[in-house]
Length: 319
Image (cartoon, rainbow, N blue to C red; front, side):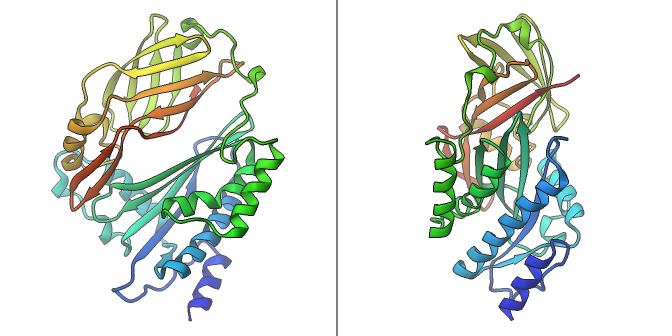
């Protein structure tokens, strides 16, 4: 029966697998999304299929169940509402009423020039909190496809099998020794001496930020996904663009990822956010890392906070 269900899962991303016994852990794969026009629907589909194959392998190994819900769009919409909820948390229906799973697996794909950025997350259905996240940066789509299975294994804190390791090693060889999951930073792609005036304007952000408006004096305002505003300060150090949070922590900064009850705890534990970017030669994109906090949450309480955590960040200029 298990082999039949696996075959159905691999055959189509639109068919839902029947629920397993209640004692078995169930994860729902919600697929990948992208806000970049340069990432085609066919590329997303190919990446989804590759990740699905590895999810099925892990499910067999770890004895849990994978489903692909028919109501994927509704689940994603409810997840967005759940994460952006205000203090009236009791008024929203639990995610478990929308999808019968213990956890959700979802991700995003972005592209800057030829570089591809893949972010995947494991989200707890009970609280809507992100339990684990993985960010990978690849020199192009083909390398992302070859090395992306490592993202799924990393998400479950597992060592990838030999065939995945070999694929990653091939990717490393093809990009002349650069680590798989790391784009080659060719100097000619990036502005040599960026100035604050080069950054002035509006940028589309990611990871909870809708837009960032930067002024030529280095002040900036970030419009968050929750419709709140966060103050930022921008500076340029040689070739590096540095952005930092320019106001004290508050729950509004974390409601895109956590319910209010958890966001108020994060305020006390998280370091101020900061970003380190390189400006593209055409002044159209900022790519680099976000320095933030990774959290472990159990039963609605933050039990640990890692303030050394970084993840991929990409901002693109708005016309």
